[in-house]
Figure: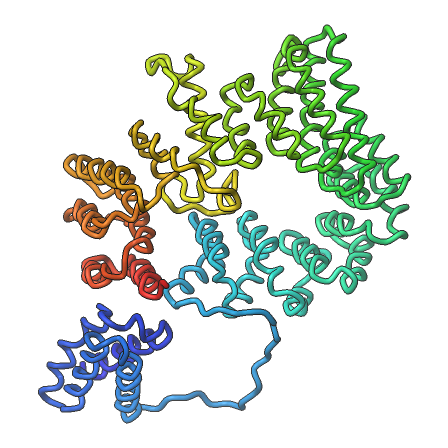
Length: 601
């Protein structure tokens, strides 16, 4: 019995040493072992000493937690050493190491364990965990490098692609030996990703592998190898030849590579493809190309397609031309190109003419929609033109125009231009059938989607349609208006901690919802608003919301765990008491959130 308790104490002390002494205070797992140590201490004084030291770790001051934990670990290790033998026989050999360079970080054990499991197992929910870990920089921990390399073969392609495109490149050339050691040019799945990654990290050094793959690689590896070409003059004849290959994915890779080559032969091949069966593949390649001549090709084809619509009587042909034209228009995305800008402005002026053109599935109105979208995300001149005509834009695209306006208008001008849509008289019963209602909702949704805090305050920046952080702050009048309208989501997106009226509204909404709530989720949105506004009563509200879980101990607290980071540090003692009542399989997530709060500046 005593040896079993010692082993458990040793395991928990070792876990805390790995996690860091700052999380040892109040640890409920170690706390559970103290009664057994005290009982054993009646027979052997050394157990009483262990119980005393464990108490010092759990209940002692934070500034002495490291010393107390070290004393506990040393003492239990010494006692166990007298009971048996530790160590492993065999010859000592140096551990193989590679210098990664750059700044590394230490990921806590509580985060590391589920992340390692997500990289080496299967099942749902893994992608979100990996994305969040990447967003928080946790892959800078060197213990995750080999698991990340192994994830290139993950059966879920989205995880493998995320690791290949976002995570592994930050390690640089240090991972090349590992990539090369497992690379098989005749393989599939992870092997094309390995070749593509090696080429991205070291184009010159990987060129030999690329050329070898063209000759003897699997189809998947060969396609990647073709897409890596285009930077050397000797590649051109081969790419021109592959642009006529029978396999569509091979032709697509050839077009992608040819789009990098600013040579007449490459332009000729892509120009021909734009008028044939591969028009979509060619347009996709041109979208990524820096060559102005290729953009001119797209502009010419778009203009020719639009001009042909006026004389086309066959509605099926009208729809086919619209599909082709829209795809070409979307391939002009983010272009700082005079001819492309002129084309968009020209087509926007012709919107009345285009509106009259009807097809069987798509019509001229669909072209107008694409033009407005491209102008809203295009040059400043395009943005100004579309903002100036905001009243003439369809309601379902007014949000795009609002985003464009944020980039070209001052905060005061933005408010004066778009706030009237929120105060206009609307028919709430007709909703979408009422233009004023649809316009109001479009502007409010634009403010929501452009906020880094979105509805629940927590959002992955990579998923945002529009980056709010890079733009001037909203005019203060927006929040005044949101409170007057009693729009919770709007207040949430515009929230400022200095707004007294917003805080009063949030508290009243929370209290009203709490009276009717049966589970914590029933007041989640109202609580999130109080957090966003840094309401002085947010701690009390947080625990009042969690109290609604009642006796349902299996309740999953996902959103509330995320809210912990928005609490003040004064909430830590109550949070530690709460963790003792939560199932162990969920406690780790809470402890990680508490530690993040504890170390928050």
